[in-house]
Length: 83
Image 1 (tube, rainbow, N blue to C red):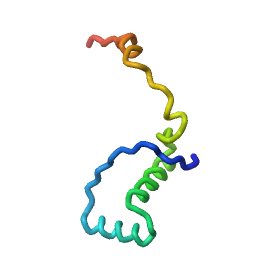
Image 2 (image 1 turned 90 degrees about the horizontal axis):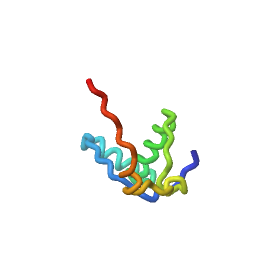
Image 3 (image 1 turned 180 degrees about the vertical axis):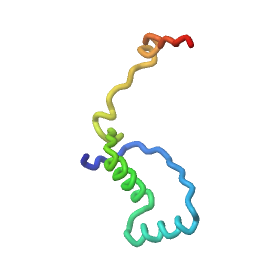
Image 4 (image 1 turned 90 degrees about the vertical axis):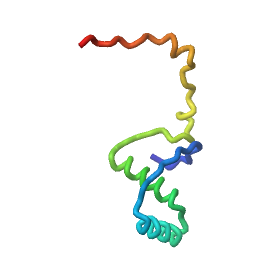
């Protein structure tokens, strides 16, 4: 999948050992990268490694219209199974 610039972002909060975080930030700085850039690349690679596909928020497919609330309200309700 070619790299597409994402237009929307979501926050991911991680808990990491402080010494490991400092070493990671130093390495990123040495490579003229931000920690966020490196983590995003790691996530893309991990998804690809496991065959997971997704539509980046910056692609035309991601901008496809979503059903309206009115359409969703008229959808058939799911039946509950009796147990």
